[in-house]
Length: 470
Image (cartoon, helix red, strand yellow):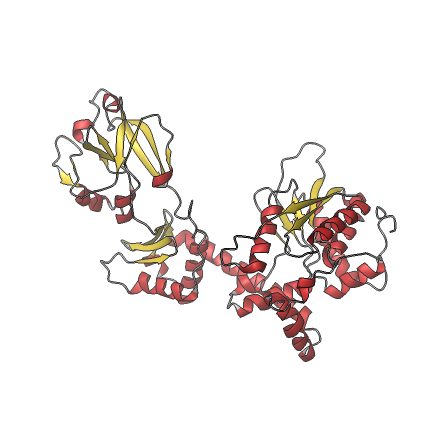
């Protein structure tokens, strides 16, 4: 193999414009220090780029090409090979990947993953999830993947068959954050597969052929081997044309996102969606905003469920408190607003606690903190601890000595405390007596005297989707 540390000129047989685009993407990324500002020493340390390296044609071309760019762009280069164990050739592929990386003057880590628990994702989905989990743990600034124009077109077609909107039809972005520390970069995304093949042949590269790539039981392979040739018989430039559509859809998706972000400012309060403001928008903007609001909570409803949510939001009786339950989450309407909560309204188990216990209560999905307040519980009542429990019915509170005792339900309604909070907020008991409800107040018999500061319980529920599979 030739000396790979010298940058070879692009051969006339290669599409210099397409490779120039890839060069521009990589150069801008490196010179900008990635997609996000990094706190660096002076002089700044080189970016650490890691290639997701299967050992196939595409990733071999990417790793080879990057090795020719190091001297000019000053980055550190490494590779990660994910060993799925799905093929009898998997061990040989891992060995091949290590050898190629060594020949290119870099290192390749081998990460073994298990696909035993697919959770209905299928082999393709499970393998992808496993790979990206490995990528997210690498000690690097960016993971580089060898997706190209054909991959982009296939992804658009897959998402089109799923009924995706502009965000799905935008297919894969050139770059995006993988997590707060690592970016994901696809510098070859505008290059057709034929260009990568020509590059590999020109530089006499060696790569592996995954036998599963010809298995049309997999949706992507079926599209690649059966649908794409049919489309190219209709339009020889089908691949590049479809990929161009992804660019247009990306622009449309960006505009819709910006519109939704602006609308959310006017239509939300305390993370709830205000229906009176939502109704002022056109139906298209209503749906766009509702989709966006749901995604900010990690929710992606199927079309039927989304349409049912619209019905729940606008068509239910004005005094009703309807809810749409989606897996382990619920979207509830209360007093003219939509709220996202846990589906279950079952309180956590009764338990004894001390004032200095850790605030997070796992079984209750929230944190209970105590702050000093003149309306809090007198400290001597808390010397021997307290007990938390859910509602059993019939509780009442006297919030001041000059005020009447009223039922907990009536006082919560008067203050607009939502039904799900009434059911899932831990009530405070001292000596078997109901002493306080966080967010409502402390019974007068337990309050600190006028010249003292007491302890006030503050309950903060965890985000609705935290700690559960939605």
